[in-house]
Length: 77
Image (cartoon, rainbow, N blue to C red):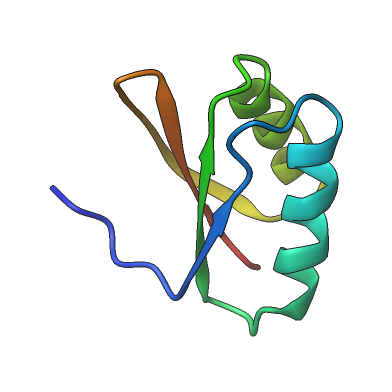
């Protein structure tokens, strides 16, 4: 099932910590309830974003893997 998202952020080719930094910057611009889809291929990006989401009060909705690309969905709280 596809998850509806408002904004897409492509950080493929970027290594830790940049996917997380760019995710934080983008989530800060969202309105409450909006969903950000992050495309990343850094294998630590999903767990870094998950840890940050828990600490920041935002919600990690899902992580999907397609051909080495992680599709990470975060809802702004």
